[in-house]
Length: 414
Image 1 (cartoon, one colour):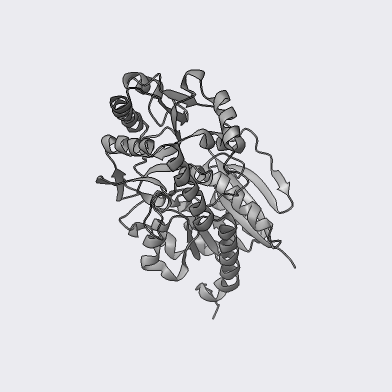
Image 2 (tube, helix red, strand yellow):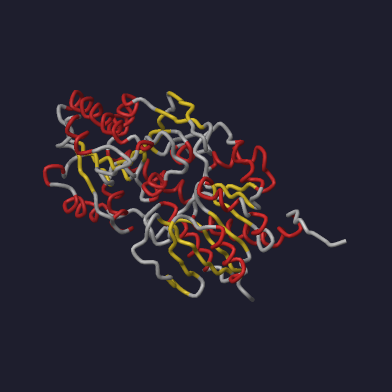
């Protein structure tokens, strides 16, 4: 049986970005089916090496600047003759691609692993959706919006992570890791981890302010400040704040642990395992991979009920929580010329601090029980194999049916 060839446009599959790692996991899973072969245009602002990378015969990556161009796609359509084109990132990066969608549709269908951060439903994206043959949404919120007007081709296929990447470690192993990773004067601290880019929408300054309020509440209740915030980020990222200065201004220099190096999946797994909880209060979060990764290790989360995080921190089956679900207390309607309107969701720093206190007061055993519940929820609702299977089915159905469903325009000489 000949394999179907898929062209993929997304972040470089060997990069550390969320889009990059999810691309890698998806492609690796689909290759195991034995009927798919992938050629990826691996996007980045700039690469250190532009040579083609052959992972194996069915997984070949060509590094490119940006996300491609009409000329590049035309060459690929002619030389590779793909069975489908799969795109995976924000639609703003693909405006040029949709301008030539009629040319693409002479050769193959377009599938999109899509996310949109928040309501109102983005009707200004309708021209993108109309030209896409399958809209596979990786957050349920995105799925809810897209199916309002494109129900016949909208599916919910969430992000997922192989279980051999993020998983719980034994108590003894965690104790050893803590002694190596946490400064000796903090070895008995309550550890709150945060793995994000230091950028405005992630609200790092507000997070530090919230943690300072939490420490004040903790000291008032217990007489000590034995808690530390572990930040895996670049404190000097040009897109964010100088977090060294913010920590000093908030009086947190003794309660902050910075992790600034690029690290492996194994080392990231260690961070989640040594943490008592993981936190994310982003004002906009399409999915939130950090929360999912933490839950998969059995670590409870403190998360704002926004975007894709809502269905993680709240069990949609019974309304129970997999940690502390923070309410949206204020919405701001913002936008730009390209994105005319979208909500930003905010929670007050005081509310975040109260959430951390609530989790702290549960005690170690109850937090472990909550973490175990979170892990079982991930295994049920964010199963890696299920995500791969759903993509397999979507690709198969779309490729088999698109010629009869897409209205090709033909010209005849009379």
